[in-house]
Amino acid sequence: MVTDRSTHRQPRSRAQLRREAERLAATSDSQFSEYTLGQGLELLHELQIYQIELELQNHALHESCEELKRLQTHYRSLFYGAPVAYLQCDQSGQIVDCNDRAEQLVGRTLDAMRGRRLGAFLSSAMADRLHVIERSGKGARSAIRQGQLTLTAADGLSREVLVEIRDLPAVDREEHMKLFALVDLTPHSVVPIE
Image 1 (cartoon, rainbow, N blue to C red):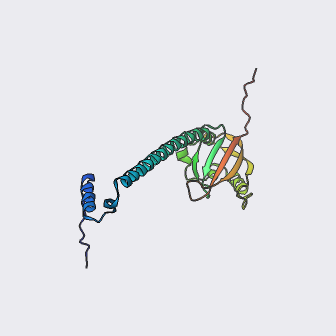
Image 2 (cartoon, rainbow, N blue to C red):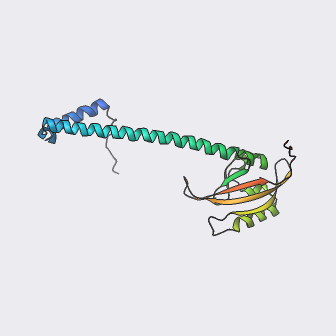
Image 3 (cartoon, one colour):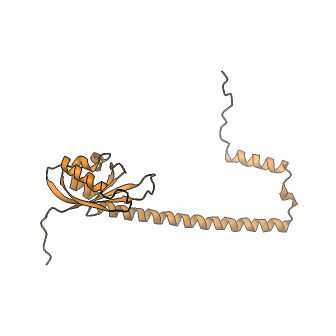
């Protein structure tokens, strides 16, 4: 049996790399020796301009990253703080994420719901109805499917909900996602506005 006997080299330090580059430059037939002083100054000027351009591009990139972080924070707060229950599901219908209102409405935490289908939290008749609603717009990617369901939360209370299902385009995942919006239709006491 033949074994690989190559030795594992330690990475060279910056100083070692610099010495090696200087040694190679001194022993090679470098084109730099053919430059006049004026041409060398021109080349130096071009390199300085190039460096400034890179610094400006780097600054613009940092500003763009900061703006993206700000927008991400803004849209996350809109999603998680929305008054409507949102459940983000993969194409098989398994819950990937949800907002605070969804946790309240279903009566379970995201950890308890993640990886399960919304139908797991419905009676069998309501799970069948949800399946029909999901399939109603099959083939039309942009179709919004909706219907009414009775959701029994973990606390045993039943709530009438309007469910709206949208397909979301793939962004940072390879597959499309589904967004389930649940609107509680159960009458609540309303404080009159004076």
